[in-house]
Length: 255
Image (cartoon, rainbow, N blue to C red; front, side, top):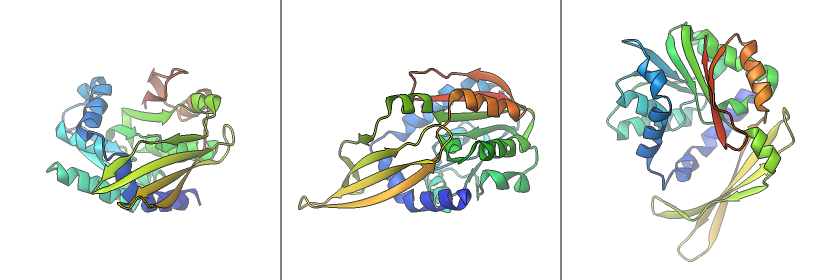
């Protein structure tokens, strides 16, 4: 049920996903990503193979490809895989992409990746601790012995402490249209199913508006519990930049 829900939600959201990034400089995102993990990428062996296991709109995978790295992009959503292909094409690049959930990865790949990325808070779409453990074990199975897994996530400790109910954007322009989007957080505590409703409000020329509501399911978890899950997968923690006041954090792991 989880996989079908998330797949459906991101398929519906794919057009508006680009609205969220409309006024951002994608090159800045690429550079930030490469700079954040430059030490890991510098240690890659010749002919290394890297998996972006939640490739989304393709920013990270494209950035890796620009570095001359063989990269494979996978995502549970067919529409997000299409966005990834489109973004790579807009940069005159291409790489292998497949529509796969984390559970499906070991059915398609063996222990062949030197580094596996799971970016963009994707792991939060695991709707129970057991499901998260199973998903990370799938990443483990496709990683070479001695290879690395990198997971970044929203800092749910901070989110639940602040308990912010709404976040609203400035006016954003995308393909000749103007939008405002509002996040409505429906938080039920740690390790409990929650969701965020995203209202995309389109402002027309005559100052009328139309509204599209989308929901994404997730499960908040504490940093402490997350680390326990990672250790239960048999992973060694090489770096953990968690800080209570940070919006996000990442963990670099070794198989």
